[in-house]
Structures are given as structure tokens and as C-alpha cells.
Image (cartoon, rainbow, N blue to C red; front, side, top):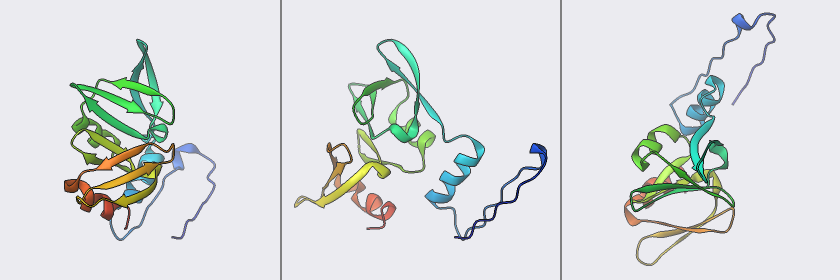
Length: 144
């Protein structure tokens, strides 16, 4: 990909043009970054509201109608449902089971299972099972 940069003297003259053959996850991420919408997710830790940077999220799990957001070594509660988070996060986040969303950028390795499922190992060495019904989409998104 070719990138041009030109310095302008006035912030009102700033703009960006992205020319691509299709709207890929990388293009969406670049647009989010440029628009300033890549940012944060509101979460709760010990009764306090915190804005968590989306890049810190490893995976999200739904248990007993509660949603939990996991980073490398912390767990937060979130008021949103998984289907809402799928829409909000987009980009490198994908549903990998009925109760899980995984950050595809945090996957270290993936191994196939005899039952048709896959096991992913995250950068923090946690293991996440990718359900059979989501394997095809995850493989497509990871170009496997």
C-alpha cells in the first residue's frame, strides 16, 4: 500500500483519502483511527466506571446474563450484551462461540480439534475454544 503525507498550515484543511479495492477490516480500522472512534469501551471495575482502550481487550465472555471483558491480566464487567459489542467493536473482534468474542490480534496460535472445533491460544497463554459454527468465519478473518 502506498501512503502519502502532506503537511498543511491550517487544521481546517486536514483530510484523509483512502483508496481501496474493498472495505476490509484493515480499512475499517484505519477509518476508525482517523475518525477518532477506535478508542474506548466503558467498563466497570469494583463499582467504578472506567474507559478501557479496545486494544487492551483479549476476549469478552457472557456468563449468567452478565458480560465480562478480559485484558492480559484483569477482568471488568460491561453493561452491553455480546451482540451490541460485536457491532461497537467491529474490526479485529469476532464471535468465536455463543458466549465469546475474541480479539483476533491477541491470538498467538490456533489448533484444530477432532470434533471440528478449534482451540486458540492467546498472547497471555489463555485458551479459547472456537465453536464449529464459527470456525469457517474465524479462518476467513485470519486468512488461514
